[in-house]
Amino acid sequence: MARAPLKRTFYARPTIEVAQDLLGKIIRHGSTSGRIVETEAYLGIGDLAAHAASGITNRNRVIFGPPGHAYVYFIYGMYECLNIVAEPEGTAGCVLIRALEPIEGIALMRRRRPAAHRDEDLANGPGKLTRALAITLAENGCDVTRGPIVVSAPAKRENFETGVSRRVGITKSADLPLRYFVKGSRFVSRG
DNA sequence: AGTTCGATCGCCT
DNA sequence: GGCGATCGAACTG
Image (cartoon, rainbow, N blue to C red; front, side):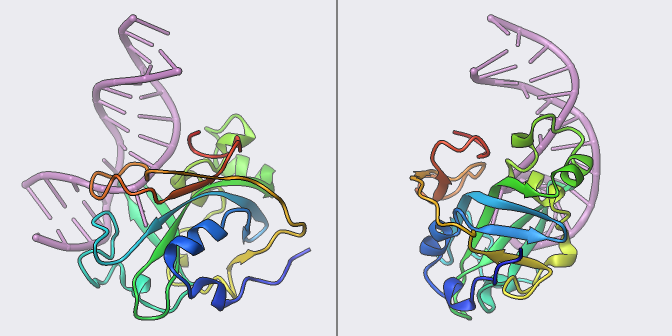
């Protein structure tokens, strides 16, 4: 039951709003999908932790492009991380997807992530969820309002509390409260 | 439960 | 040439 993708106007807003509002949404790639339970906002100028901080380069150019596109990058020689571009075209800003609650294709995710022995370990980290959903650099720049990665609203509205904390694993601009998560979810990368 | 450390490589100075 | 928006295994206590 594929629901309609979120429209581009959803993404053409301040990065912090988009990061908060992406919680609870469904992300799908192929036959695998999950519910977003953890995000981080990465801003433009002034956010020294953001890839966009020092201006446009060949790697980060999609962050400066139109909203609603995937920014996928390669890190530590072995992992991909998935972001979704926010802000109007020409303004930098993106949301790192940090954790998913697996929904569809769990058996396939288990095959892709043999180290995960529990469902909550399949996608509770940015490098894990790209592995579980088979998202690679080939998806960099793709339009998540069209595909092959698609983001949509859940079938039923859910109520949850949003937790806020510092972002994980960075050293610069580390004090900013730009990490958001579904409070109480056992699928987040950390409490 | 918490800490340390190795794997592995593209990007940018 | 150094380092990074990570992960998982190995180790300690």
